[in-house]
Length: 119
Length: 112
Image 1: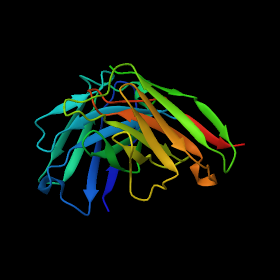
Image 2 (image 1 turned 135 degrees about the horizontal axis):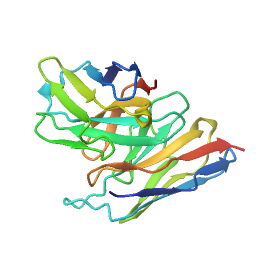
Image 3 (image 1 turned 90 degrees about the horizontal axis):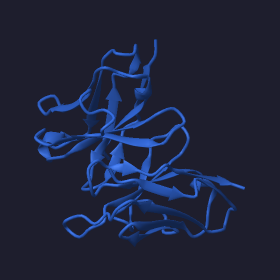
């Protein structure tokens, strides 16, 4: 059973930065050519797809709402994914989920990590 | 971007009765390989979303066969043949055919 564990959430001021991590457990993702996504959910709101990274990091996509501010990367040697979030805004406040790609779908999700942007 | 529109947004249901959720996309979800990458997720309060259906009509392991998905092109439906108490929560459709991927607004299912 695939498990994804996010970390790095917290409270940050508007304009600040934060880096989220996602570490799959029970498998080494670089061995399987697996792609990943970030999805977020603002308090009491629906789901919003945020970003995608291919298994080798060579193909990355972002939602327009975060393009130019967020960077999705992966370190296969550490079996860890990263979401570097800069120039944070109040509307970035959300639970951020890491999810495994399954060819046009998301089959496994982490438990999420809460990011709060507030002064 | 493709806009996914769900209806209804709120669905009070009676246990044992059927329920249906519609999901419409602003353009066709056919991918270059001929597949439609339309998914359905279920989220209970305080939990992460769980995938129920992928590629329009394929059920995930452990999803009861009273839950089914159908559709093509721009029009898709999730049906529950007989609602049970465990079905409460919010249901989301999501397209993975075109970048950026997009979700519907969500349909909240509650027991009458």
